[in-house]
Image (tube, rainbow, N blue to C red):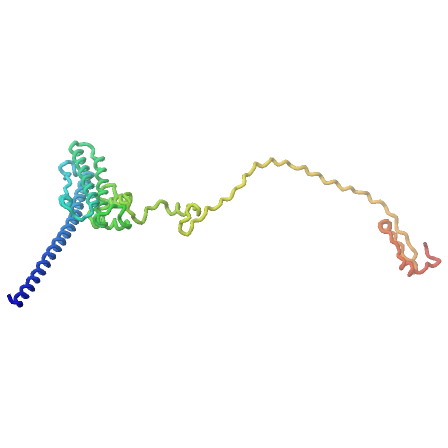
Length: 311
């Protein structure tokens, strides 16, 4: 064999080997991708299967309430071939979500058997119907978690607004007033919140009047936003003692004025008009009240009396 022939054979063998390895890799990838697609379709089939079973149970409970369902033949047993097929083979799906779905199916099947037995024995179906309604609410909550939160448990689901749950139920055949005397959407929201899912806004615990009328203490909640105010101090009202009986005071009578009779007075004495003689005060009261004592200066300045003056 010549060198050219050997090189051609070697190159051809290497190319065939590369093509074979590529084909095997592509086949393996195709098989894995197909299995992944089948798994997704199987999980989606579980969603449709569960929705159909719940819709059927809802129609049966509505018929029991209005009296149109009166025989156990009208209550159809629960079947779930999609779930059984998915659980019969190994897969990468979350087994916790599948376990919850299987538990809901078992609960629904038990309540349906109870309804069938009550209808067959012609006894009251009120208790069995109420329990079936509660199981229906829990199954609808599980279906919501399966479709919107990838089947995770309620406590592991992300925080969601309650209106998102209501909008999801509006898009499904679960009407709010499908059952008489029950608001189905509110019951599903309450069930999710009771199971530990965070739904906002949280239900109100106080009315607006009660909330703004509350008295807060800063020391009671130091982490409160903007610090809560202290309660106002209420003024202490003084205790009024019983008033004692007022004793009328005795008012002393004012003394009556004493009137003295006017006594006749002597006429004043006439004095001689003497230009050099000082006038003598004839008022006895002024003479008695005041005593005039002449000073030395006045005595020195006064002239000596004349021989005809009266002393």
